[in-house]
Image (cartoon, rainbow, N blue to C red; front, side, top):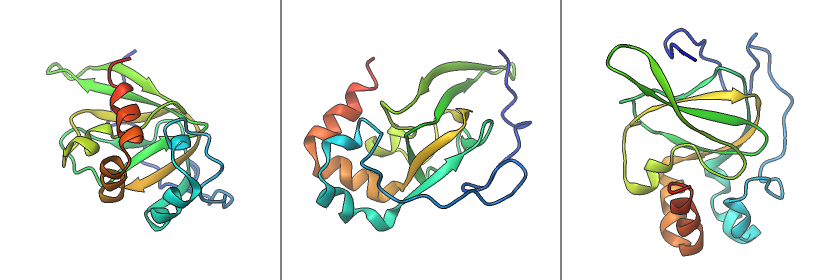
Length: 154
């Protein structure tokens, strides 16, 4: 399947494709993301200001290659595709990330810019966390860090 990342409409988080506001949802659900389940409520609360629960829509761009990484996304009910842009202009899907993982893992390893593209494949809920807070959480919680790294080798 060829996807032109530049043809996919950009949708503001928390709105649908038509621009209408989505209903507000609570932050930090007893989290449906498997990586975040290893953290206690207190550990999650420490990072609460850096986290927003959002609704991502099909086709929404999360990352574009070489652009700055300001956030990571922990899918709860959505699925994102990671895409590699070939020199010929076509895209190849490298993998999908759902409630078992994180979109933007390279932030934990010190990356400042996206190495690849990421697009929402299945609409749903995710937690969006500021990159600096995500990196701090990765460094402060060894089990969380190990689980994040394990998602790379699956």
